[in-house]
Amino acid sequence: MINFDFDYYKASDLKSAYDLYKDLTGKGKKVFYYAGGTELITSFRKGTIKADALIDIKDIEGIKTIRCEEEVVLGGCLTLNEIIETHNIDILKEVLIHIGDHTVRNAITIGGNICGRLPYKEAILPLLALDADIVTYGEQGLREVKLRDLFDKRLKLSPGEILYQIKYLNKRITYGMKRYTETTSVDYPIVHVFVRNDSEKSVAVSGYCSYPLFKVFSNESLEGIKGDFESFGKDDKRASKAYKKHLFEEALDSIFREMEDK
Ligand SMILES: Cc1cc2nc3c(=O)[nH]c(=O)nc-3n(C[C@H](O)[C@H](O)[C@H](O)COP(=O)(O)OP(=O)(O)OC[C@H]3O[C@@H](n4cnc5c(N)ncnc54)[C@H](O)[C@@H]3O)c2cc1C
Image (cartoon, rainbow, N blue to C red; front, side):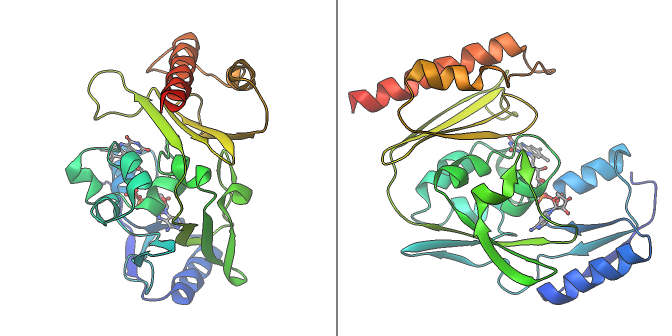
């Protein structure tokens, strides 16, 4: 049960959503954009977050766009299943398919996964490796920036800024991933490692500490890469820091070995 009242608004365009957010927060109200609602409603029920108003952004024009040509364009409010079921979005699909179960993937949006409070944000791992751009709407209207430039532990959006679209070149990259969970595969990851190894060598990892980590390497050896991540590991209720380090290093060994064998 949600034990407080809140107002619900539905926006049809970016400007009216943003203006409404500014207007309501200017009056001292606590406001959230509402996408899939899975995180917000769970938090409301638990009483860990309260709100005076929700602005539903799913009907905003273009925020459900899905285009897969030379460039892939994904609206921020596409559900994970809408992306998974689209032909030719293979790299992202391989990651998204592990988030929650089929039912919850019908609701979770890619924007919600990236902008939410939970530390995992697994959708961001391949997007960082693919060097995606993001289009946001805020004080200056639309802006397109490198995801890598706006991501530091979390997506650094200004208050009220909306993640509108994600774009990346539909190019082939050489990649490998390993995802470890505590019991069944439908669970948050203890460690999820995504490696790119072609013209660029990069490693993205979720679960290892309280935010996703991403690093690009030039000539570092595998041992050097491992050492670069070592200090970030954190104990949590799923696993100790030592166990995460073990899984992380095992994942790197195995991914790079598989790449060499190909
Ligand atoms: C059962 C279950 C299993 C899960 N398993 C995993 C997992 O294995 N791995 C993983 O990474 N995550 C997992 N999650 C977490 C899930 O991806 C996040 O909770 C995500 O926030 C849910 O997306 P949503 O669209 O429902 O977000 P909402 O609840 O609608 O919103 C979450 C937050 O993001 C903000 N927001 C949403 N969209 C935008 C946007 N376009 N622009 C700006 N702000 C926005 C909202 O204002 C709010 O603050 C799981 C969640 C559930 C419920």
